[in-house]
Image 1 (cartoon, helix red, strand yellow):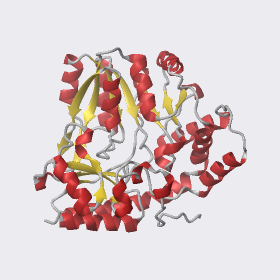
Image 2 (cartoon, rainbow, N blue to C red):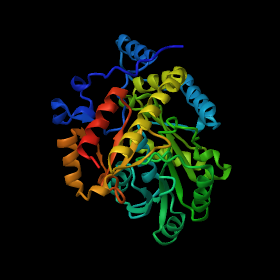
Image 3 (tube, rainbow, N blue to C red):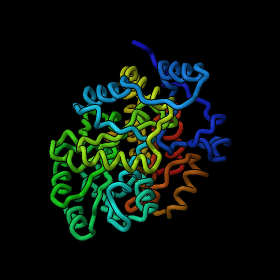
Length: 389
C-alpha cells in the first residue's frame, strides 16, 4: 500500500494561495479558514499536471469519453447512484453551476430559499441575480449537538414567500451535518408538493466520518429527479479547486435542456483541459489516497473537539462530514468584531467569521482542520490559551 504524506506542512506563502494571503500570516498567524487542504497532492495528480505542462500546447480541448465514465463509476461505487452519461453537465465550479440554475429556472424577485447558517456564496449569488433571498434558520439539537431542518418553517415559507427554488447543502456547510435518508425524503416531498426546484450542492459528499453515509438526493426517490439538480466535483475531495471543473447531474430532460441553454448563453460551456485531466485522474486513481486521508481528518476533528470542549467554554459542533468545524463562542459575550480581533491578535489564528454565514452565525467561527496534525495541535493550543475557561 502506498504511503502518503499527510505530515509535511507545504510552504504556500510563495504560491498566491488565498488561504495565506492575509499579511498577518507572514508574522506567524495560522490560516485555518477557506475550505482547501494543506496536504500534498498524491503522485498521480502531480504526474498528470506535469504531463499537461510537458505537452507544450494549450489550445482548445474537449472532455474525453473516459472522463464521463470515471465520474459515473465514482458516483455508482461510492454513492450507489447510477445515471446515463447524458445526465452529466460540466461546469467550471459548483457556485457558477448554482448561478446558471438561478438564471435558467427563476425570474427576478422570485423567492429562493436557503438554510442558515449557509455557505456565503449562496446568498451572494441569489442577491446579485436580483432574486429574493428567503432563509430558514437551522434548528439545533442540544442532545445530539447537531443541526436539524425546520420542516414546519420550510413549508410555511414555501406557501407564503413564493419560493421557486431551494439551494440545499448536503453535507451541510458550515455545520458538517450529513442528512439522513428520512430527512431528505421529507424535504423532497415538500418540494414536490409546492413545486419547488431543489439544487443540491453535494461537493463534500466524499468527506463523511464515523460511520455516517451520504445519500445523494436523486437516490432517495425516482420522482425527485423531475424537480432537482445535483451538483458535485472532485475538487473538494482531492484538493484541486484551482483546476476549475465540476458537474451537474440533471436526469430530467426538460430541466437539462433549459440548463444547457443557459450555460451556453453565459458562455460557460468550456472547461480548461487541466481541470478535465485532473478530475479524471482523481476519480480513477484517488480512492486509495482518500481512504488514507479520512482517518487523518477524523483524528484532527476528534482532537479539536476534545481539547476545546475540555479547556474552553467554546461549544464545538462535531461534524459528521466535511473537514470544517462550527464553533460557538457565545459564552464569552463578545461582539463579532471583538471575537475575530481576539482570534487574530491573541490566538493568532484566522478562522471564517460566523456572521458571514448569515442568521445563526453571530458569535461563531468556522475552523478548517484539513492540515497536518502538528498544525492542528498548535492551533488548538493557541485557541485554548486565548479562551481559557
